Image (cartoon, rainbow, N blue to C red; front, side, top):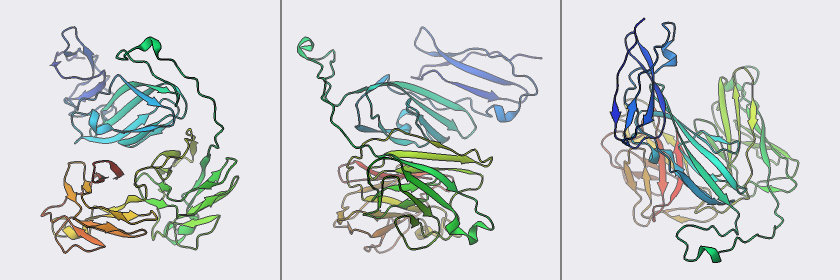
Length: 414
C-alpha cells in the first residue's frame, strides 16, 4: 500500500475545515491548520483503505471555496437580524446545500435566515455548506443574546463604570405555540387522483387564538401556501391544509394545486409567520420516521411590507429555454391589505442579474405580477426584463426582492 505525501500553503482567510480528495487510486483526507506564519498548511493524510467508496470522498475538490463567520454576534432577545450564507463564502457556484444550526435546537436548511433568540444567553451558531462534489465545510460563531432592557458594556464606552445593568421587570406575554403535527404525504391509491387526501395538519397548543393571516407553509421545493387574511386558529384547535381544491373553513384549507406536493420519499414542511420567522418544521423520510422539530416560538413582529412576496418561479418552461424566454418568469403577490408602490424595487438572481421595477408601478392588494425574462410590453400583470438569454437556472437559484432603499422584502430558493 502506498501513501501520498504533499504540502500546500494557502494565504487566505479560512477557518478550520476538512474535506476529502479522490484521485485514480488514492483517497486522502486533508485537514487545514493555521500555521504560525498566518498561512494554512495541508498536512499529509493517512491513506484510506482500498474498500473505501467514492461516495465517502469527493472527486476533484482540491480547491473548495473558503468559509468564514465573524467571531461573534450581539443580539437582543426577541429581535432579529438577516444572515446570508453566501456572504461568508469566497465562491458559491459549487454550493448545493446550506444548513444553519442556531445552537438552541433549531436547524434551518436555507441560505438566508432571520436569526433571532427569544431568551438571553450564549449560543453557538454553526453554518454548514455542501459542495456539488460532496465536500462539507463548516464555520462557527458565538452569539451573545442580551435581555431587551439590558445595557451592554463595551470597551469603547465613555464611562463603563457608570453604565449599570438594568434588570427589567417581567411583563406577562401571551406566547403563540403552533406545531405541525402530521403530514399525510402518501394517501391510498394514485396521488394525482386524491389531492385532497394529501395534507398537512397544524395544531395550536397554546392558550390563545392565533391570527395566521399572511403566514406561509412551504415544502423543500418552496411550493407555498399563504394563509388568507383573517384566518384564526382557536386555542387547542387543528387545521388541515389540503393540496387540492375545496372551500376553506375553520378546520380545512386548500392549496388549489393540480398536482401532488409532498414527496413520498421524504420532505420538510416549514411554517413561517407573516414576517418570515420560522415557527416550526416537520421532516419525514421514506422509512416513516417522521419527527416534528420543535422550535422556540417568538412573539410575532411586524416586518417591512410583509404582504409582498415571491409566489412562484417558472424556471424551466416548455421547449428550449433560449427560445421561450417569456415563458421563464417570477410571480410576485401582494397578499397585504393595501396597494404597494414598487417603483425602484429590484429583483435579482444569485448571480446578480437585476430587474428594476419601472416608475409608477403599483401592485394592488390581492394582485399578482409576473416578471418575464424576455421582451414584451409592460402592463399591470406582466413586466419584462428584456433579456436575450435565460436567467433562472434549471438546477437551482435564488430570487431576492429588494425595496427602493435596498432592504430585502422576500427571497425564494429552489
